[in-house]
Length: 137
Image (tube, rainbow, N blue to C red; front, side, top):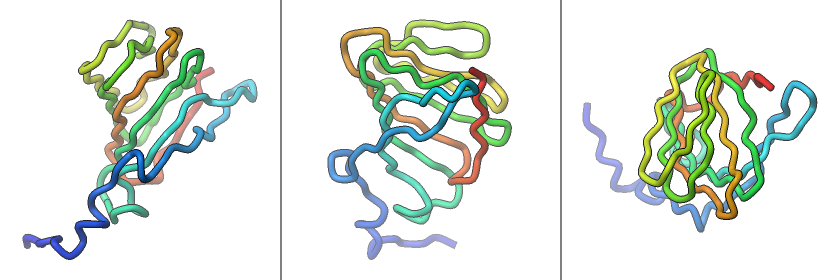
């Protein structure tokens, strides 16, 4: 049954500058900190999403988002700015703005920003919350 969310517009629309960034909080196999910033945009807490999660990610120059995988969700990146080194399975490649990258379940992936400019990307998950983050390095 359709639902007209007119009364919930403030709950359904979020702006990166207004929500703000926080540091990634994962740890790798050797105790190394995951690097990068995340701004949640579509989550159960922010807007009541029960089927997907979307965030704005930022990887600063010199930062590395550790290689990891998710057995329970697929993921995507859309590069907005910068040219990160994307690690996908056993390969790495240089991404550019407007690239969309699909990451199926179980596929190891990570991001390295070895450039002098920040990388901004939209990150989406196929579940709203509760997925596993399994470090591979």
